[in-house]
Length: 168
Image (cartoon, rainbow, N blue to C red; front, side):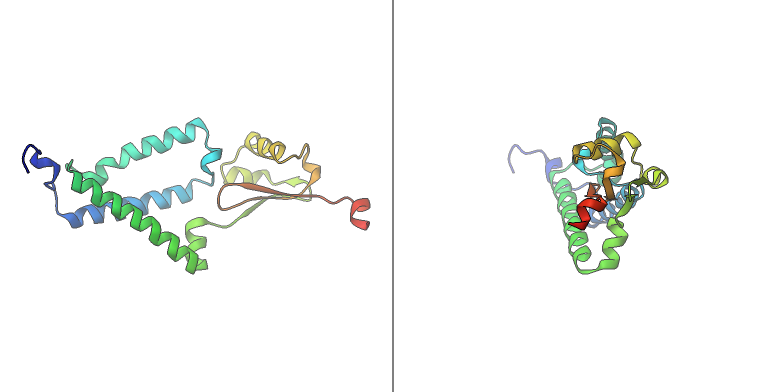
Protein backbone atom coordinates (compact mmCIF):
# COMPACT_ATOMS: atom_id res chain seq x y z
CA UNK A 1 0.00 0.00 0.00
CA UNK A 2 1.30 3.37 -0.97
CA UNK A 3 2.07 5.83 1.84
CA UNK A 4 1.18 3.38 4.63
CA UNK A 5 4.02 2.46 6.99
CA UNK A 6 4.94 -1.25 6.92
CA UNK A 7 4.72 -1.42 10.71
CA UNK A 8 0.98 -0.76 10.53
CA UNK A 9 0.27 -4.20 9.05
CA UNK A 10 3.45 -6.17 9.87
CA UNK A 11 3.16 -8.26 13.01
CA UNK A 12 6.07 -8.19 15.45
CA UNK A 13 5.37 -11.80 16.49
CA UNK A 14 3.27 -14.71 15.21
CA UNK A 15 -0.53 -14.21 15.37
CA UNK A 16 -0.95 -17.16 17.74
CA UNK A 17 1.34 -15.51 20.29
CA UNK A 18 -1.12 -12.60 20.54
CA UNK A 19 -3.91 -15.08 21.25
CA UNK A 20 -1.79 -16.94 23.82
CA UNK A 21 -0.78 -13.71 25.55
CA UNK A 22 -4.39 -12.48 25.63
CA UNK A 23 -5.64 -15.76 27.11
CA UNK A 24 -2.92 -15.73 29.77
CA UNK A 25 -3.45 -12.09 30.76
CA UNK A 26 -7.25 -12.41 30.69
CA UNK A 27 -7.11 -15.48 32.94
CA UNK A 28 -4.66 -13.90 35.37
CA UNK A 29 -6.59 -10.62 35.62
CA UNK A 30 -9.89 -12.52 36.03
CA UNK A 31 -8.45 -14.49 38.94
CA UNK A 32 -6.97 -11.36 40.52
CA UNK A 33 -10.23 -9.42 40.16
CA UNK A 34 -12.13 -12.36 41.65
CA UNK A 35 -9.79 -12.46 44.64
CA UNK A 36 -9.94 -8.72 45.37
CA UNK A 37 -13.65 -8.39 46.13
CA UNK A 38 -16.90 -7.30 44.56
CA UNK A 39 -17.82 -3.84 43.40
CA UNK A 40 -19.84 -2.62 40.50
CA UNK A 41 -18.60 0.19 38.28
CA UNK A 42 -21.12 2.54 39.91
CA UNK A 43 -19.57 1.80 43.30
CA UNK A 44 -15.97 2.47 42.23
CA UNK A 45 -14.09 4.94 44.33
CA UNK A 46 -11.48 7.17 42.68
CA UNK A 47 -8.88 4.74 44.06
CA UNK A 48 -10.61 1.77 42.34
CA UNK A 49 -10.66 3.66 39.04
CA UNK A 50 -6.96 4.48 39.40
CA UNK A 51 -6.16 0.81 40.01
CA UNK A 52 -8.11 -0.22 36.88
CA UNK A 53 -6.30 2.33 34.71
CA UNK A 54 -2.91 1.33 36.11
CA UNK A 55 -3.76 -2.36 35.72
CA UNK A 56 -4.45 -1.79 32.03
CA UNK A 57 -1.13 -0.02 31.67
CA UNK A 58 0.70 -2.69 33.66
CA UNK A 59 -0.49 -5.58 31.49
CA UNK A 60 -0.12 -3.72 28.19
CA UNK A 61 3.39 -5.00 27.49
CA UNK A 62 2.34 -8.52 28.50
CA UNK A 63 -0.24 -8.34 25.75
CA UNK A 64 1.58 -6.61 22.90
CA UNK A 65 5.25 -7.38 23.53
CA UNK A 66 7.18 -5.24 21.05
CA UNK A 67 4.38 -5.18 18.48
CA UNK A 68 2.70 -1.87 17.61
CA UNK A 69 0.84 -2.97 14.50
CA UNK A 70 -2.82 -2.35 13.84
CA UNK A 71 -3.41 -6.02 13.11
CA UNK A 72 -1.78 -7.08 16.40
CA UNK A 73 -4.08 -4.76 18.34
CA UNK A 74 -7.11 -6.08 16.47
CA UNK A 75 -6.10 -9.69 17.17
CA UNK A 76 -5.83 -8.84 20.87
CA UNK A 77 -9.17 -7.01 20.91
CA UNK A 78 -10.93 -9.89 19.15
CA UNK A 79 -9.35 -12.46 21.46
CA UNK A 80 -10.28 -10.55 24.63
CA UNK A 81 -13.86 -9.99 23.44
CA UNK A 82 -14.14 -13.66 22.45
CA UNK A 83 -12.86 -14.75 25.86
CA UNK A 84 -15.33 -12.46 27.59
CA UNK A 85 -18.18 -13.85 25.46
CA UNK A 86 -17.02 -17.43 26.14
CA UNK A 87 -16.84 -16.89 29.90
CA UNK A 88 -20.37 -15.44 29.78
CA UNK A 89 -21.70 -18.40 27.80
CA UNK A 90 -20.07 -21.02 30.00
CA UNK A 91 -21.22 -19.17 33.14
CA UNK A 92 -24.80 -19.18 31.86
CA UNK A 93 -24.68 -22.93 31.25
CA UNK A 94 -22.68 -24.11 34.26
CA UNK A 95 -23.60 -23.19 37.82
CA UNK A 96 -20.25 -24.48 39.08
CA UNK A 97 -18.25 -22.38 36.61
CA UNK A 98 -20.42 -19.34 37.32
CA UNK A 99 -19.82 -19.69 41.05
CA UNK A 100 -16.08 -20.09 40.40
CA UNK A 101 -15.92 -16.94 38.25
CA UNK A 102 -18.58 -14.76 39.91
CA UNK A 103 -18.50 -16.07 43.47
CA UNK A 104 -21.54 -16.40 45.72
CA UNK A 105 -23.73 -13.78 47.40
CA UNK A 106 -22.63 -12.93 50.94
CA UNK A 107 -25.03 -12.10 53.78
CA UNK A 108 -23.86 -8.92 55.50
CA UNK A 109 -26.83 -8.30 57.83
CA UNK A 110 -29.34 -10.71 59.31
CA UNK A 111 -32.08 -9.63 61.74
CA UNK A 112 -30.46 -6.21 62.15
CA UNK A 113 -27.04 -7.66 63.07
CA UNK A 114 -24.08 -6.50 60.92
CA UNK A 115 -21.39 -9.11 60.25
CA UNK A 116 -18.31 -6.87 60.31
CA UNK A 117 -15.88 -9.71 59.59
CA UNK A 118 -17.76 -10.48 56.35
CA UNK A 119 -17.60 -6.80 55.36
CA UNK A 120 -13.85 -6.83 55.94
CA UNK A 121 -13.38 -10.12 54.05
CA UNK A 122 -15.25 -8.64 51.07
CA UNK A 123 -13.25 -5.37 51.21
CA UNK A 124 -16.35 -3.27 51.90
CA UNK A 125 -15.83 -0.55 54.50
CA UNK A 126 -18.47 0.16 57.12
CA UNK A 127 -18.73 3.66 55.66
CA UNK A 128 -19.47 2.29 52.18
CA UNK A 129 -22.03 -0.09 53.66
CA UNK A 130 -23.70 2.75 55.60
CA UNK A 131 -23.86 4.82 52.42
CA UNK A 132 -25.55 1.94 50.55
CA UNK A 133 -27.93 1.39 53.49
CA UNK A 134 -28.99 5.04 53.55
CA UNK A 135 -29.33 5.14 49.75
CA UNK A 136 -31.71 2.18 50.01
CA UNK A 137 -33.81 4.12 52.54
CA UNK A 138 -32.77 2.47 55.82
CA UNK A 139 -31.80 4.82 58.63
CA UNK A 140 -30.68 2.07 61.03
CA UNK A 141 -29.52 -1.54 60.97
CA UNK A 142 -32.57 -2.44 63.06
CA UNK A 143 -34.79 -1.82 60.03
CA UNK A 144 -33.00 -4.48 57.99
CA UNK A 145 -33.96 -8.16 57.97
CA UNK A 146 -31.33 -9.10 55.42
CA UNK A 147 -28.58 -7.31 53.50
CA UNK A 148 -26.78 -9.29 50.81
CA UNK A 149 -23.66 -8.42 48.84
CA UNK A 150 -24.60 -9.79 45.43
CA UNK A 151 -22.10 -11.26 42.99
CA UNK A 152 -22.44 -8.05 40.94
CA UNK A 153 -21.12 -6.02 43.88
CA UNK A 154 -24.52 -4.46 44.58
CA UNK A 155 -25.91 -4.64 48.11
CA UNK A 156 -29.58 -5.58 48.30
CA UNK A 157 -31.74 -5.02 51.36
CA UNK A 158 -34.87 -6.69 52.69
CA UNK A 159 -36.88 -4.77 55.30
CA UNK A 160 -37.54 -6.19 58.73
CA UNK A 161 -41.19 -6.77 59.53
CA UNK A 162 -42.24 -5.76 63.00
CA UNK A 163 -44.64 -7.97 64.98
CA UNK A 164 -47.59 -5.58 64.56
CA UNK A 165 -47.09 -5.27 60.79
CA UNK A 166 -46.57 -9.02 60.27
CA UNK A 167 -49.76 -9.95 62.19
CA UNK A 168 -52.01 -8.03 59.78
